[in-house]
Image: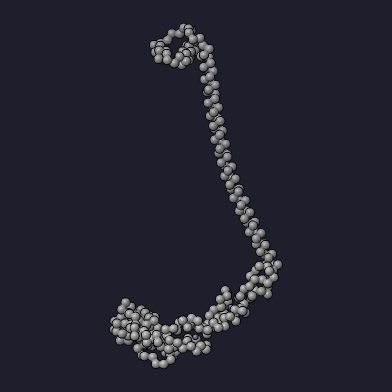
Amino acid sequence: MGYDLERFVGYVNEGLLCCVCRDVLERPLQAPCEHAYCSSCISTWLVHHHSCPEDRLPLDVGSLKPLYRYMRNDLNRLQIRCVNAAQGCEVVCSLESLHSHEDECEFAFISCANTGCPVQVERRGLEAHLSECSFRSRECPNGCGHTLLSIDQSQHNCVAELRTEVEMLRVEMLCKVEEVRREMESRLDSQRRHMVQKESQLKNEVEELKVKSRKITYEQKTLKTVASFPRSGYPSVRLCSAERNCKNNNKRNPLKLHLRLYMLQLIKS
Ligand SMILES: [Zn+2]
Ligand SMILES: [Zn+2]
Ligand SMILES: [Zn+2]
Ligand SMILES: [Zn+2]
Ligand SMILES: [Zn+2]
C-alpha cells in the first residue's frame, strides 16, 4: 500500500502514483511498459494476474525493475506530513527522511518497557508513565532482598516471603540428601557384588591348591619309599621282553627306573 496522497504538501506528479492503489508509491517497482507500482501492491496483483493492471500487457514478477533514477529522486524529495499528525506532530519532511523521523517521533505510540505492562504511551509521555507504572520493580525497602513490582508492593510481607524461601531451600536440600543417599547405596551394592564374586574365585583357587598339595605329599611319600629301597638286588622278578626294554631305555633316569620296577614288583607279588 502506498502513502496517502492527503499527507503530501504541494504538487505530486501523477507518474509517482501506484497503478494499483492510486496512492503515492511505496518501495516502487516498474514494469517494462513503464507503469510503476508499490512492491506490495504489484506482488499481490500478480498472484492472480499475469498482466499490467493498467494496460493489460503481459507481466510477471521477474520482469519488474527498480524505478528510473530521476523518478526515485522526485519521489524522495516529496514533502510529507508525519504519520502522527493527528496526535499533534507538526513535522513535514522529505519522503526520504520520513522513516528516521517516525522512528523517534515524540508523538508515536510505543509500548511500556516493563514486563507485563500493557500500556502504550506517546514517546514523549513514557518517562512520566515509567515513574508511576504498576509494573516497575524495585528492591524491598525493608531489606529482605526481594524485588517487588509496585503493583504487589502493598501485599508484600517480608517475614512470609522469607519463611517460604527457607522452606523451599529446606525441601531442596532434603531432595539432594536423598539423591546422594541413593547414589551411595547403589555404589555399595555394586562393591558388595564384586566382593562376593572375588570370594568365590578365591575359594576355588584354595580348593585347587589343596588338591595340588595332596598330590605333592603323595609324590613325596612315594619318592621317600623308593629312596629307602636297596640300590641293588631287587627281589627276583621275571621281566618280560617289554619290561626289559623299558629297563634298558630308562637307564639314563635311574630314579624313574627304580620307581617303575618297584611298582612292577608290587603288582606281581
Ligand atoms: Zn500501491
Ligand atoms: Zn503497463
Ligand atoms: Zn512526528
Ligand atoms: Zn508501564
Ligand atoms: Zn521485603
